[in-house]
Length: 159
Ligand SMILES: [Zn+2]
Image 1 (cartoon, rainbow, N blue to C red):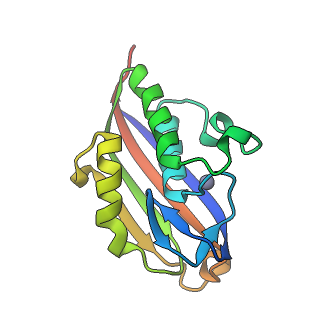
Image 2 (cartoon, rainbow, N blue to C red):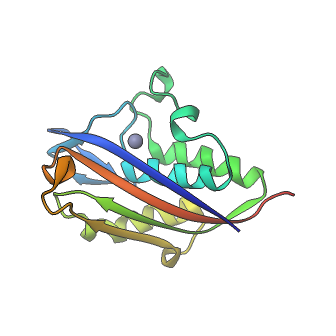
């Protein structure tokens, strides 16, 4: 068994749209990002990569890479999963905490699970999603940023 931890932060600006877990959660707020800025998927990918001791998202998909501009994070996740599956690992579960002052996102969890479960090869019951605010404290509390923390468990792996 291997545990992995991922964390991602993006600044937020007015306008545009915010995608989390492959689902649009706001049409008047957007992350400052080179890719599509899906903070949940970035943290999730780093957790999976970390569990397999592989390089992180920023190394695999550099933000100066033209091919990564506006890139769909769900497609990047497919690349990451192919890497760990090739090493013989199987994903057991994932669990994430979204820290975002507004808008509330928990109503989007069913849609996120529906989007992510087949990609991850997991039952919905193995995709943990939680959301919390920062109680008005710091940059997240002021709505200037969002942060996602994620852990995952891998089993197997070629010895
Ligand atoms: Zn990111």
